Image: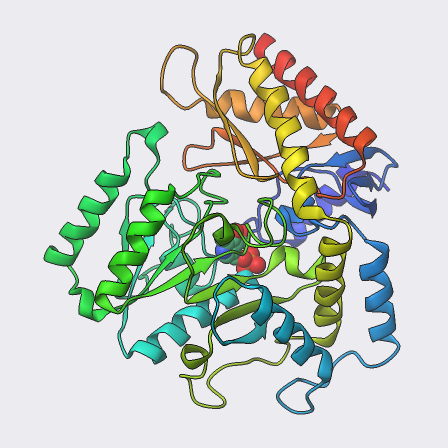
Length: 425
Ligand SMILES: Cc1ncc(COP(=O)(O)O)c(C=O)c1O
């Protein structure tokens, strides 16, 4: 079968609302490599958007899932519960930052985790409002897209958003928004639009994912916690994209001395199987009445089995440390190219959550066209890259943290060739 044949069928059968960035139809995948239906091999620097941090089909994850398949696949935890749901909750309660009693619920997607985090925060505080950040991404459900700080394509045409959600500019020094600027807008928001006593929660990605791989400055995170404490506002850390060794820690919040009240997780937790979680202070998590949380597939036993295996793999293979050393190699290579590629405006990111940002040379104008060209040139050479950013001028690197050294070296050579070729036009 040809990619183009499936692409034609896809165009006829699937809503264009589900966009795709490649026309590479997957046939097989192993660790950091994907083979398409025509037998062509690609190195995967997307990892299913930060999902297979532990690599495609990690043997330990597959073994755990197979064992679960042979046991039972679905009973609905709300009807006939099972032990591995409890075991994974216990592990997350211990691992999520915060030296206090925690509880967890499981759902299926990142957006659902965000929805539930907001429900729990509202129930616990008896307050309605939520404050999010420009450029943030929190999913495609109604609350998820309302919280998301980017109109195109996430909100456009979808009608009225949820009430009582406010956005504060995310501090990005590179774009002229300082920590003080953001805090000053927050202060004005409290004076002009919403009484802080009505705010249930702040929701923040420690490193914005979709928005462009911008890290929350430490000073800002600390101030956010201070303001939250002062007004009885809860802090929700959306770790859907940053979690599970990606930033060189199990959770990105570990880089700050700041502890969230509620943490959302998905993606990397399941190593390729759909599972998401919300973990938080026990008394907050217990606020909703029995039956108020859950869902038919939430904490499906197969996803849970995968999650338990993923946590073991991260620990056994030292993936947090590996993320740091891979990220350093990638950033060094990109920084070394900055002299010959004048479009490179910034190279950044903690651990292996790295990005390169491109501007039109000699200006601070985002160069989305060059960014796309790099992505296309890399794909032609067998490397799958993803773009991101409010201006579409960022390439984000999300390779599996388990990528073998030789495959990684090969990918860096392809990346360099793609950058040089994109410069030629
Ligand atoms: C930070 C963050 N939150 C929430 C989501 C939504 O997750 P899902 O696509 O699983 O609904 C994403 C997805 O990219 C994300 O990056």
